[in-house]
Length: 353
Image 1: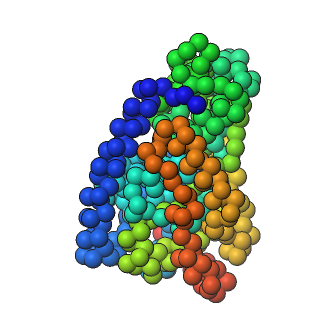
Image 2 (image 1 turned 135 degrees about the horizontal axis):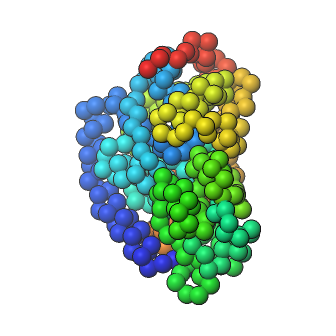
Image 3 (image 1 turned 135 degrees about the vertical axis):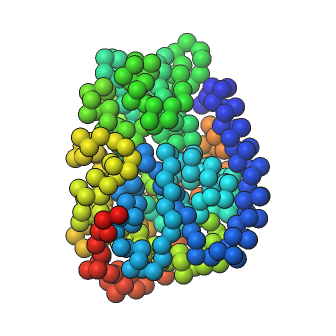
């Protein structure tokens, strides 16, 4: 599939910058591990539900105290912003979708995937009044995606499957770069006919009756960590994964509370509460035994499909073997005694922070 020369140059430039900084980051990481082994910075996205709710459960409860490991939590707008911080040595753990994670894996060998974060829908939302009813109706139209975000290759995949191409020729789909926070404005102004996005941006557009969904598919978020940190301090990784499991169960028990925490932290209107489309199975857990943050073979295959699509579209400088970059050994060690024997659910409470 063709992509615009502007998009190609922007992405190539960003990737080259990331690769150029990679060696320096890895050298710095080794020293950081030796001098400050217990300081771990977790990056998360303010533009992404339901991952944001899990982070808020870890931030606003005593979960991290109970499991005796308190990382620092730093918020970012979306995946490429976290990647930039990761390549600069400022983030040690990422909560990202497959696309930014794969971009990071391609840019640095010092990252591995250690667990599943959430299932989350990606959607193509058409502007109200655009006349677009199907993917085929996007021919010759302008669609906005955040370059480097999860919906970018998703849109490329769907257009290609429909027989459409991106470019400047007559009949081509014009693909432009817009950050998640800019998409609703572009829809309102009529500067684009559609956007490729995720929750809560989809809910925001729908709640204002500015557009409607014409296509959607399950996407996957993963937890990734610096390999140097994980190898040097596996006990911290296991504590962190226990905290993720406990936080997932807290979200299941206290959905509205964690929604409110997320909406406040992300700066979205409270009116969105209750309208977010949630497909993450952990939110329906009846006990902590139901919480699952493991990656299935299907999940790994989905990761490889996205990696292949990104390489084909010129979004990666080198291929990524997703399965080889997944290390579930830390999670397997946790699951030997948890959750049935290791859970501290009865002691979890909101801190009022």
